[in-house]
Length: 286
Image 1 (cartoon, rainbow, N blue to C red):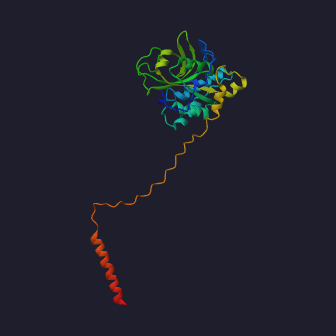
Image 2 (cartoon, rainbow, N blue to C red):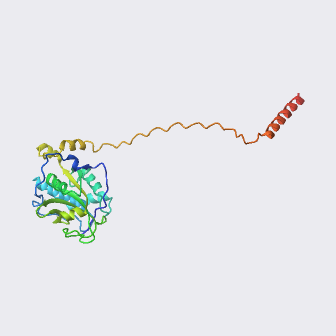
Image 3 (cartoon, one colour):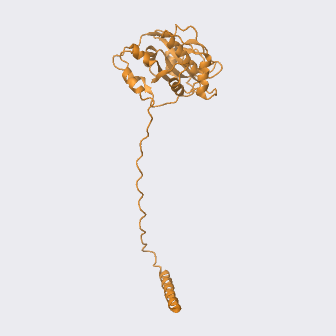
């Protein structure tokens, strides 16, 4: 099995989930299941390549589509083609921020996300709201050197950002204090404690916002109008500030005579002598 998430890239322009949560939003339920309807989770080459990011995106498409009653399972070719397009043909793993931008711009297996919203990895409530409201949460892990490949229950050593891995969380159970994630072709549990220690970036990924708007199933308390307005500016160019013009340079100051420097008498005498010689020569020639 392979990993494949590169260390996080940060972008201060990312949308933050907290901006869109208004008073009146009910807390998420104690248990959410967005995985039971999916019977098979493909490996998507993540046993050979560092394709965990696109593989996880493929699993999210499965969960979204099965629960929208229009099942879609991307093929292995779809996922690996997306992966190698993103990396330029090299098996280098991916930066999640770059992957999410490509999912929004180009899509995977014909399915695009409308936007992605950054969530706070230290807040379990934001994780559960993402799963409840938007079907899943995509998380980047900095896994420890011990129990790197599981089980992901009792935290062990310190996070290692070079053991990066991407997984979608497609359910949770408060009573058991477990999330349910899809990785390496299967559903596995992840404890809340493991999440809090090893998740180093997390995103709510919004799929098919047009359908949400059309069916009016926007959850009360989620500020869809503000999000929709922000989405209109996703492609706005960033205009750098116009620099102030440089001031005109000051003219060179006039030289100041040095009172301690002796007067150049020799230069004066030589000048007078040369002038007298030239006058004499002119008179002689006439």
